[in-house]
Length: 180
Image (cartoon, rainbow, N blue to C red):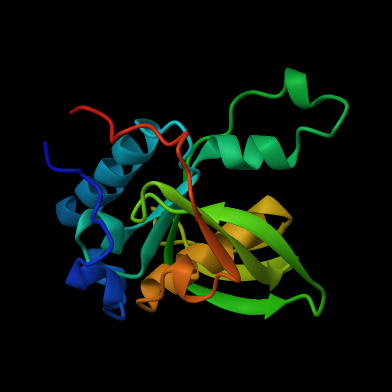
């Protein structure tokens, strides 16, 4: 069975993604694409985000799973009482600023199955984007979220994490792709 996520070697993963026109944000095509991305992400045990090129669309869009935001706040005393955070779409995201301080973190990718690597990234990253309704917002991410932002923005530039990794290793614990 073909993996529903584009894999390394696919040309769309190496293209610079095109912006989504403001008038198209509420279109059936974009809403359908976002729904497809959320559904694909939901089927992945370890995936915390997905960019449009990973599902074959060379558009400037990524979705971060709500569970990634939940993990960010897991250290807060009342985190257990909070409801599950919904997945969040970032349309036409722009990196506003990053911290000077960098950190090596282990990283994987749904488009590079069976491998993980160590990537040096900024500890914090702020992104400006449009939400699913076309409303602009800014999100300041640190730790895992800041790392995710940089990984996904790289996807939109045609860059895979293995291009930046200081080490890449086979991951025998990776399960095969999910069944449809």
